[in-house]
Amino acid sequence: DTGVSQDPRHKITKRGQNVTFRCDPISEHNRLYWYRQTLGQGPEFLTYFQNEAQLEKSRLLSDRFSAERPKGSFSTLEIQRTEQGDSAMYLCASSPGGGPSNQPQHFGDGTRLSIL
Amino acid sequence: AQSVTQLDSHVSVSEGTPVLLRCNYSSSYSPSLFWYVQHPNKGLQLLLKYTSAATLVKGINGFEAEFKKSETSFHLTKPSAHMSDAAEYFCVVTSLTGGGNKLTFGTGTQLKVEL
Image (cartoon, rainbow over all chains, first blue to last red):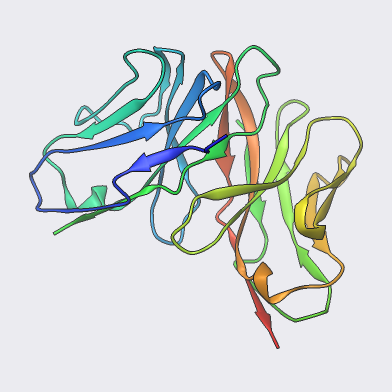
């Protein structure tokens, strides 16, 4: 069990640029979640995948955001035309499938995005 | 909708003294509740979980929490604080979504441990 891996750890970009983050979940986990955490706040749910299917998207996920999990393994989160308000920590989590739906989620260390 | 309220944004204790971090929840059905800890610039680590079994839940690093339905509370305690416990702690409630569970976090409690 190597844990949830996120890449990059830090990303600094200019406003208006596109960015993409990657998340590799724990290998046997088929549920994958994305959260966003702004300074001084708790994480907020963005979206959820069961295998390759994106089953829920938060209203926080504007049209500039898109997430994919093409083969049901790793996932990417892309932000187009970044804005100052996108500066945050983006966290990925995974949990096993096939059992109770309230199984704990295992988090990666996050990608910290800073918009100049 | 499910929600949690963490009653203290900051708690400061001396090393070796008890820790109490308070959390109240709101849920339209029997909730699943968790406590997570976050050290600076790191992800979240699960401390313990309540899923309608025993109301007193023991977690890692000597932490435990008691689910009290009558008070809608899920406070986190530890008998003796250690310097390494200094971190941010989040109380979390789940809501079901399409077969998975969406976590709703409290605003966090920053724990400071002094010598």
